[in-house]
Image 1 (tube, rainbow, N blue to C red):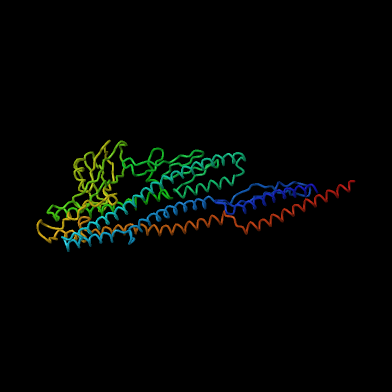
Image 2: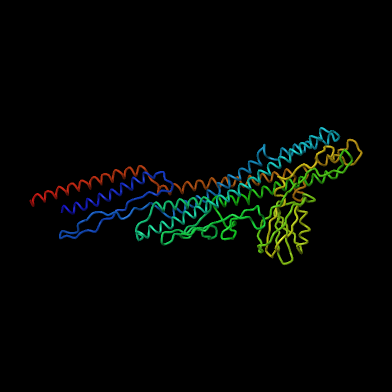
Length: 550
C-alpha cells in the first residue's frame, strides 16, 4: 500500500512541477509578440485491478498545448491585411489632399496673382515696371507649378521605393516560414505527431501576420504540420520547405513604372490587401490621376495663353512669341502587349488647343486594320482605319505615337497620359518685358486689346471641349483627391475597429491573463505541497511496516 501511495504522489509531484513550469513560462511571456497561452494537459494513468476493485495509479503529463483557434487566427490575419491596406492608402492620399487644398501650396492663389498682373498690363500696356511684374508673376507661377509637380514625382519615387522594400520583406518572411516549416515537421515527426512545438508554431503565426501587413494571404495547413502560403490569385509564396521569391521589374512599355513579378510573369493587378496593394492602388488611383489632371490643367492653360499671346504684338512691333515653354515633358505609357519585343516611342508635343485635351487616352487595336482612341475622361471614342491615321491624329491630343520595335497585335491596349510631368517641366520662355504682346496691332500707342484678351482667359471656358475654366478644372482636381481621401479615412477608421475586435478576440482566447496565472500558481503550488505530504506519509507508513518486520 505504501508503494502505491508513493507512486501516485511522485507522479503528482512531476505533473504539478510541469504545471508550475508552464505557468511560470506564461507569466514570463506575457509581453511576447504572438505568444499563445500554454496549458499542461493531465491524464489519469491506467488503473490497477485488485480484488477490492480498480485502484488509481497516479497522473501523467499527456501534453503541453497552446490556446489556439485557427478561425480566430485567420480572422485576425485578414483584419491586419485589410487595415494595413486602407491605413497606408489614406496616409499617402492625405498628403496629396493637403498639397492641393492648402492655401500655401495650392495653385489658385498663384494663378490669381498672375492674372492680376496681366490685368495691370492691360491697364498700363506701355509701363515697363508693370510688364516686369507680369514676367515676375509668370516665373513665380511656373516655379509653383514646378514645386507641386516635383513633389508628386518625389511621391512616385517613394512609392517605387516602398514597393521594392515590401517585396524584399515578403521574400525574407517567406524564407523564414519555409525554415520554420522544416523545424516544425521535424519536431512533430520526432514525437510521432503526439506533441506540437508550441513556440515554433507561435513564431510562424507571427511571420504570417507580418506577411499579412504587406499583402493579403491565404494559408493551407498540410498533414505534416507545414503550411502553404498563397497570394494573389493562388500564386504560392511558400510550399512546405520552399519559398518562391517575388521581384520588382520595370514595365515592358514604361521603364519608370514598377511591376511585381512572380516567376517572370507580372502579377501587379492580381494582388490585394496590405501595404503592397495600398501603394499600387494609391499610385494608380490617386497619384497618377493627380499628376495627369495637374499636368493637363497646366498644359491647357499654357497652350491657350501662348496661342493668344502669339496673336498680339509687342512694344517693338513684332508678333508675340510663346510665353511658356514645356521643356522635356514626357508622357506616361502603361498597358500590355502580346509581343514581348514591342516598344513604343510616345513623345510629348504641344497641342494646338486645350479644348480636346484629356488626362488620359486608351489606344486599342480592335481589328487587324483598325485602331480605337478613347478619351478616358468622357469615354468618347474615335476609330481609325490604320496606324498611320491614328498617328496623324494624336498630336492634337498632346502626344506623338510611334512603334519603335516589335508590332502591335489585335487586343493590345495602352493608356497614354500626355501631360504627366508637364507641371514639373514648364518654364517662362520670355526674358524681355518688351516682348509681352499686349497690343493688337503695331504702331498704336496705348493699345491694350490683346492684353485684355489675355486677362479674359482667366474666366474663359476653354477646357474640356469648352465646358470648364482653368479654376473649375483645378477645383475638380481638388474635389477628386479630397473625395478619395475622405473615403479612405472612413474605411481606415472602420477597419481599425474591426482589427481591434479581432485582436481582443484573439487575446481573450490565447493571451496571458496575469490574474489567472497567479491563481494557477497558488493552485499548483498547493497541489505540489499536498503531493509532497503524500510522499512523506508514504515514507512514514513504509518505515512503520519495516519496524513491524524487524
